[in-house]
Image 1 (tube, rainbow, N blue to C red):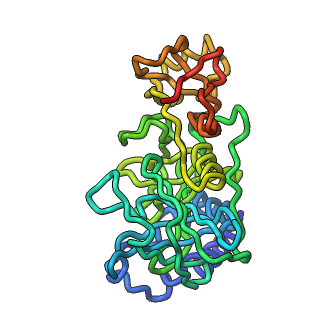
Image 2 (image 1 turned 90 degrees about the horizontal axis):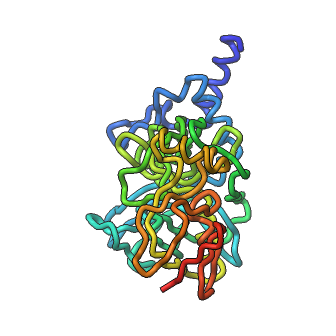
Length: 332
């Protein structure tokens, strides 16, 4: 690509996606500068092109309690249900300061939704799940906002080492934010074994936003970490939304097990495992760390599709079944 074409691309993105950052934005008034050293690298420009088609679906959300600002993060339009448009985001938007397991109720918190055209709409908290750190905010039906389909990745799709893009929208300048990195094979230090990790250098503004690969496949939604970025897998998120749409609540089964993803194993252990179970070569599955004494399991590795997300498809049955050599786990 010629230098002239590169310059044209840079000018295009400055004009359309970096807005006030290059029109005398008062950085002192901003929590952070929306610009980033990645913005005009070749990878950065490619990343922006990946998310261009989703721009109208990416919104900023700002919460407040009794007139005092609480938190600002990113959300994604994921459905139109009845007279409402659903926006997926992080439960951090309504979590009470200084707590991990307590959030404000819908009538206690005010939520402002900022669209791509800088229009502001009042939102309402419809669902909040602190276990998976996800929330749904609803606004008046907006057919002009395209929905993002939260599809599972293809079967045998490997995320290990895959280049990815994190998407956000700044709550003050309202510009689209994009950071790129790679998925990595590590375990999160947070108390949630389902989390994936990527190297996208995000800020807290990105919390609740999408992480996708360069083929526009959705990997999950991003949270915030100091060294790496935690990602909640889209398989879990989409099943939570499906369950909430049907029951208007999340009925999570008690499986009486604790485990972690196969891809987070040390390389030596992963190699031994894959020799015996070739289908695990793409890092799909759950390794059981702990089983409740009332539950009998024969297998050490529980095959549940990509993650424990498949378990969320089980509804009000007496038993939760896992597609793994006739294993059954009794619900409480």
